[in-house]
Image (cartoon, rainbow, N blue to C red; front, side):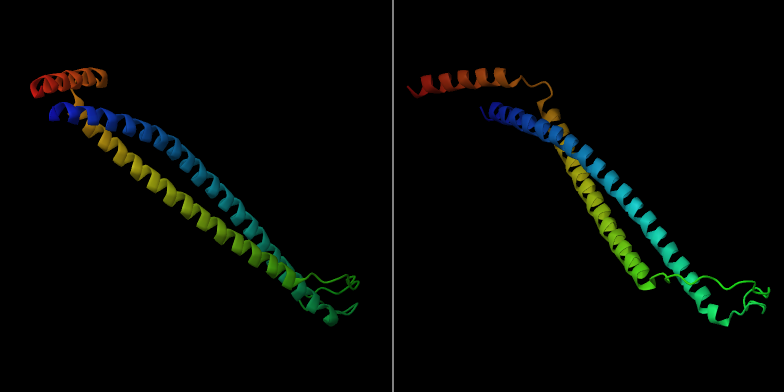
Length: 171
């Protein structure tokens, strides 16, 4: 009776492990997609950050160039290139370096957030993969124990016969 019950239990365990493996494969695909999506978002954030860093540099260059404007005089040499100044540059509003730096800081923060999201997604992917490996290993062990064993319905019939025989003996 014990051997039959153990095999019947293994059939139940096998069914649970198969269902868990199926869910695990779905979770594995979802985790991989989430990791891929997070990596793509991080890449976009890094590109945006690089653009903003380049903008900060351009603003800095422009402001340094503007600092030279008071040194310019028509007909005198430019302090940078040495050519005679033909006309003074038109003064429009100077670019806002503080704003450009704030935008860069925001982009840096976004990159950090997306990097954490990538790490979290990859950690989740590893957890799912590890669990799926364990489930598949457990399933292989159960299937090895069930090799050559009757199916669940046949075991139920055999257990019923054992119960009938036991009842007859007890009577």
